[in-house]
Amino acid sequence: MSMVSSVTAPARAPSHGWRMLGILSALMGFASISTDLYLPAMPAIGQALGADTGMVELTVSGYLIGFSLGQLLWGPISDRIGRRLPVAVGLVLFAIGSAGCAMAGGAGALIGWRIVQAMGACAGVVLARAMVRDLYEGHRAAQMLSTLMTVMAVAPLLGPIVGGQILAVAGWRAIFWVLVGVGFITLAALFTLPETLPAERRNREPLGRALLRYGDLIRQRRLLGYAGAGGFFYGGMFAYIAGTPFAYVTYHHVPPQMYGLLFGAGIVGIMATNTVNARLVRRLGSDRLLRGGAGMAALAGLVLAAAAWTGWGGLWGLAVPLFLFASATGFIVANSIAGAMAGYPERAGAVSALIGAVHYGSGIVSSALVGEFADGTPWPMGWVIAFTGIGSLLCARLLVPSTRATARTS
Image 1 (tube, one colour):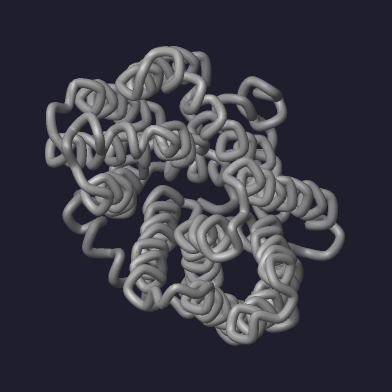
Image 2: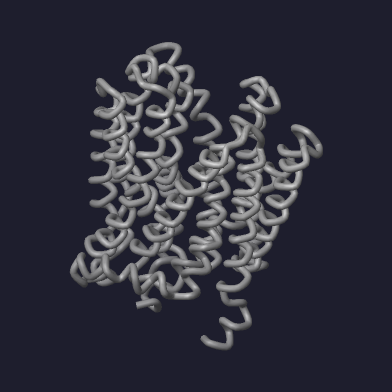
């Protein structure tokens, strides 16, 4: 099985070129555009639907729950029947959910349609990663994932800006109608790509048994190491997203326009480290870069926690370590995903789904912790990020096998 993938997959991959890159980037970007585009409209949505801030914020939480759990279903399905059909069904579901959001008459209905939207959107994200694994192996898979993440990082950079313009011109419901259009355009583009998982490489076991095998996967120390390194780090990133609006705008009185620049700087850092990772992964190896990135995240988290506790450095005492923490994304995410899927070519969809569920599940927990322990200072955000950085480092150092250990056992 692995011999087939190592021989045939690289041979097919180069022929797809920039079209493949663009479509996979669009699929992976659905996680960002589904939320970032409507963030500026949240106050207007609350006013229009007569909902308080907490109810409107539940539209984000509901989306994360649907996105996290939905992946666990799409992964095994794609391993059994191929990638294109599940992605297509997911895109149609995404469009239906977006239309439901656009026509929602109350906050409860909006939350429900956001869950439907997320269940569809996650199919594109989880299966785009699996398609990369179908086509590439080892350091080349990590390199391709880094390139995709560099491209898709444009979405959170531009999403709030574009969403704000749509809101000003046509109102908040138009944002969701735009997402309906994006879903159908991506669906049309999808059918220009070939199926990446041929019939002879598919997993034929019944779907129920495939779902039960998640228990077997999470007992694999190596997989647990990669999932933990990425999962802890994602938890820190969601704490960053949940905590920085308050830490910057409310606590340090940063103007909203300046907040956009500070947030954008983190995205630029992510794009830069993904580019560096893509260039260095062949020479240094993805595991070494993963450990280096996790070390960077842990150090930045500790400095951030100290600054948040003592007030040292004021605004820049927070902004600089937060920038460094976010920038570690380029060394952690792609390498942890590629490493996790490397040993399971016949179950790439299920592994990708499990990794995604861990990532977004940790985000739900960490963002909730930041809110639960809010005390009027940046300290709750600081200690959550420090904890997740250390957790990522421990997983990368203690659970991911070293190159020498891997060589001895192979």
